[in-house]
Length: 207
Image 1 (tube, helix red, strand yellow):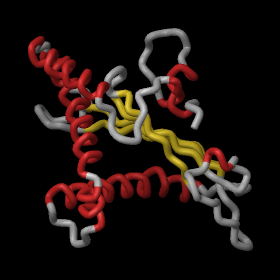
Image 2 (cartoon, rainbow, N blue to C red; image 1 turned 90 degrees about the horizontal axis):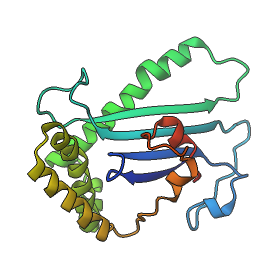
Image 3 (cartoon, rainbow, N blue to C red; image 1 turned 90 degrees about the vertical axis):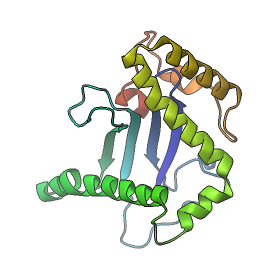
């Protein structure tokens, strides 16, 4: 069972970070969503230990996978897990790293593209969007700032950069419902330098 927490740090670092960790029957109730109970293990089963992080940011211009003027989000993914096995066959490791992870991301992209284009056979995703349009409009706005911020920095267009800065200020003043602009999580892992976060920093965030 995986618990995930997202941090919007687009304004300062230009990315969204997601911290993931495993839940078990030893997890304090204060760390669980309201009303959620970790189900008991079935006989003969074992939960793995898991910790991971995802960084989403605008893809740099010099990245080999980016085409000119293409809006691409760079995703970095790092996980640690203990499968509770005396030995994990190399074939399993190869399958997970070379096939499974790539297939999962490809499926996410395929589904999101269908939802965007209105071609998804089922309507579950669209119904969720229609039920909370304010949040999804804010989400789209934040993604636009993340992508356009890098473009403007590269282009050096002072006037456009001022527009983006104004948009950032407006967003800070009107935070999305249910979110927080508190930077305490960053402070917990701050080394005292103005260096950008890395995956290790994200993994050290306290949930």
